[in-house]
Amino acid sequence: MQNSLFDFSRQTDPDRLTIQRAYRFWAPLYDLVCEGLFMSSRRKAASIAGRIGNDILEIGVGTGLSLGDYGRNVSLSGIDLSPEMIGRAEIRASKGMMARLRSLRIMDAHDLAFSDSRFDVVVAQFLITLVENPERVLDEALRVTRPGGEIILVNHFYSETGPAAWLERRLAPLVRPIGLRPDFPFQRVERWAEARDVEIISRTASGIFGSFSIVRLLVARPATSRSEVPHA
Ligand SMILES: C[S@@+](CC[C@H](N)C(=O)[O-])C[C@H]1O[C@@H](n2cnc3c(N)ncnc32)[C@H](O)[C@@H]1O
Image (tube, rainbow, N blue to C red; front, side, top):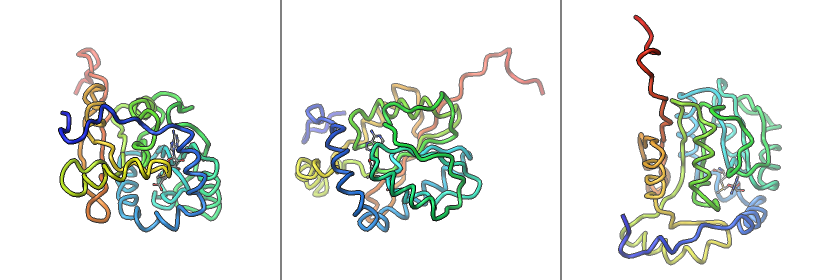
């Protein structure tokens, strides 16, 4: 459905170079600005992910603020495009964490170097609105998630109506060079999920003023053919 006030078809997604530059700038400041702001949403997402399965990939792991949020049962892999951000995640990990860390790697979420169905859960916190091609990143997350597993997104999405939406539209072009995108519509995730037969299990408001969403996307299990139905 097209929002009548704002033509999203004219929106472009951020380019990789701008995002790389922005997160080179953010790396030394990031924890100071974002640690407290994202904490409750991050912890909720990690707790949900840990209940789904042990083998978890976090894409756009950044400075690794979430590394301490996962429980002891979790085997965690993290990737990020920015060497500066992931360098900080490595320092954080070296100080200890509860989860078992498999790897932290510089990698583009558009091209994940992992095999199909490799993970129980893929988590993307404050990432999907910042990538060059969000649908492609979702496709990659889908590819590496096992059937019956989940993709969990944590993000602010465009407010759609009211003064908040007005402000987000006005701010969008100003904050894009610093790697922020307040006007990304949730309907892009909905459209993608519909096209891929992925079920949106829930979208839960979280964080200050409920301005973030925790979105759970269930990766379908292949239909069981009659001959494969186990006998009682
Ligand atoms: C807003 S930060 C979020 C970091 C972390 N997830 C958190 O919640 O604190 C966005 C992160 O996504 C990373 N990123 C942006 N585009 C990416 C891409 N194409 N592939 C992997 N990481 C990317 C940035 O380098 C940055 O570390």
